[in-house]
Image 1 (tube, one colour):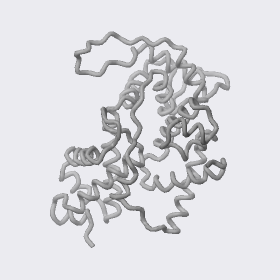
Image 2 (image 1 turned 90 degrees about the horizontal axis):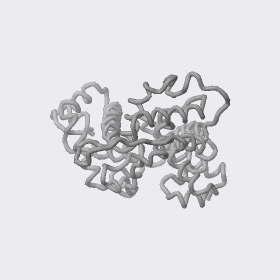
Image 3 (image 1 turned 30 degrees about the vertical axis):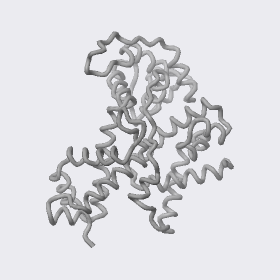
Image 4 (image 1 turned 90 degrees about the vertical axis):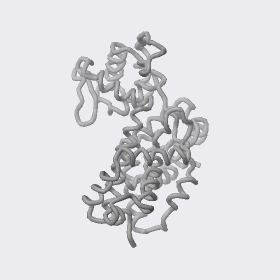
Length: 307
């Protein structure tokens, strides 16, 4: 049976099979990465998902997809390359969100923070000493102790207003890193500053039923299930006890998370947010992330005797 790759090679264009694969890949990437909906939208809709697929095609063009088909060796490798292409494109779109803009701003400011270095994916201060703490509450409290100055901005400007001036961001980053001498990942640092600066993106509220219509669950494969369980155990090992507890309820409200785990509402909300960010980092470019995440959540329920 001909697949999307062979269809591209035979016709030089994206045909019905390729279009269906592109739509399916976009939907699965949105779900597995928990990507926020487009700015101004409260949730992903069928129309927005289709538009995202069209944007990927418009940006890459038929020749780019044809090149992917030519470079791949079979249908499976073509799907893997298409997956990476869609991930990169949608994450690039995501950088235009509020949190994405904050991340880019932090990257711009970091070189101006005295003593700040980036090594092995972590940001730290070279002169930081002591045991310190990496508890999220302590990090947020450290950032909250810094006064934030926001520059005056022309309301008619087409550009987005700054969330804080450079000196404020430098001071906040230094204050947070002083609390965590062992350093923080960029995700952890941005998450801390986002709470202090009230920078939030809308969560992905796309209905799972929509995804199931496009990509129905496959029949259970014992070998695949075993792989998912191993991957889930590895994923769980990277999470703190509180992060493990909130894992099964990441699609729920903070009130539900607090009730099911016994954590306070604020703690539940903060932990759920930081867990989503950590998972996005841990599962980056992992096409089997959905299965691993499902098994990790199941293991967490059993380990902590959660409802």
